[in-house]
Length: 240
Image 1: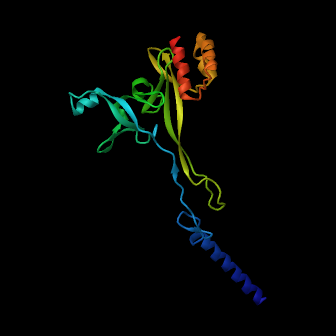
Image 2: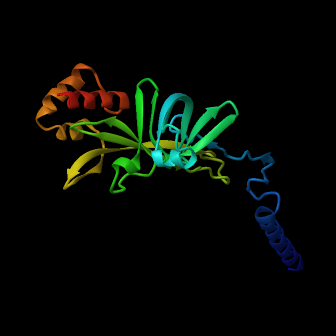
């Protein structure tokens, strides 16, 4: 009986020591601890926070009142500079000889550059009077009878890694989501309406010209999931 009690007490102590090791000691599966003798690599953030990570030679139009604060005689537009748009900090980066300089998007009225097609970015505050879209730039995909713009917002996919089971994704991922809007006449002013530019929805907005546009999409093998093809369909409709 004495031996049994002594063994039982020893087992309890061992179990408690093991719990302590897992909770506070070398077995703790944290970022800076060893897990079963293997050092855990920390996760990273993948992806970029730029509208387009490449630099592009662009034409930039500033708000005149912004320019006049610094130089009343200076023009409100420049061209030929290499630029890219930082979506996290909401700035336009300029690649200069002395390094990269940034200008707040709120100071820029329009920005144009070529990237397989002409990209036209306009400041949301000029066309979104109801604050429907996020602040910053909107890409102007078409203007006329049917005006369509696109906003790009950043999303983060969180890591799914489970340390105890050693399964899942360790890295967080930044991805970009496009949100589309069309311009609708509401009373005395135009307002943006969010929509998904599926074939069915787009043709519904085109009224009596829908059949012609549908044929144009089919004849040219256009995919409305592709912005360049979507833009072609919109330009064609506005030309009818």
